[in-house]
Length: 412
Image (cartoon, rainbow, N blue to C red; front, top):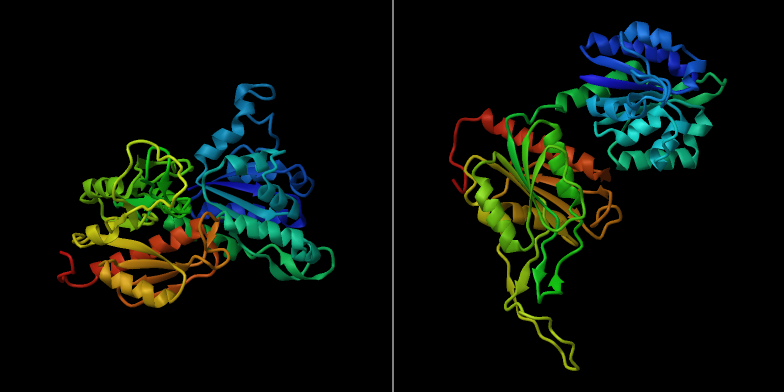
């Protein structure tokens, strides 16, 4: 794995030299990016000698052509594109604030904005700085965006105080890296179909029925599956989101269009995650022209839309299928009922009225209900982290099936 190691200014910077060596021992290629403050504590030459790679210290003078060259001007983009993991250790309060606020005034902060790889940060600072509300808010923001935080340990600090703020032990940092490495390509060979977003059911040429789904959860699943090596087909209702890298996107509008797109591609997939918020009804008779406003009440006759998950899961064969249950009450009871009725293997349920778990947010709070009886409640997590846990659970179910003798499955 190609790891970019960001080193920021703090007494713990000297520990990063040992971190380079240990990462290399595990087979990784390391390129170091140092902030100006980091160079007050340890020299770039140290990291160059250890890593065998050039050390990046400035935004405009590191490219092959030097200052003023085109290579130098876009070097942060080139580094971002070839990075499999961005690791920042130690991470100061300053760099956490820059990352959280999107400030890009040096190479490392600019690289963070340009990188699409997983990000791990290991903070180190004074105990009061770590506990300050501003720092904790920045950490929470980064967590919500999917950044992995290796929290500092407690003990004697360089300032003479005692408390949380010491750089985490290298073993803890390495463990976080190993988790990402393990997940890097564990879906290679799988073809995963994902549905996302709302559907729009037209009333007339200018009006339609829809819901508040942004598509973020489904897009997060698609992005994570692609990052982990799967071929991903994303069938998306109208959503103002960029297509995740490496994902084949199929745009649809209505529930009928989504069902058709899913049916035509389901045979090629090994797993399917139905995260779309499909409208339950459509208008029985769509008006050919715009319905004019009148003085009397307007009645629309609604008829049920097809249940895409149920329709497809009944023919799943050996495929694994996950669905979503957006509930407002009796979460567990309703989720278990849907799991059985729709012949799914996994049901992701949440209370959409709970703070941090509703539509169009950066986070979600879900419980995973599995066909084998396991219930896995998750805390408030970023949607990227929820996507990771969903895929982890599907892999667990897949591995459990492989370890058992072949049996007849409902819907075969």
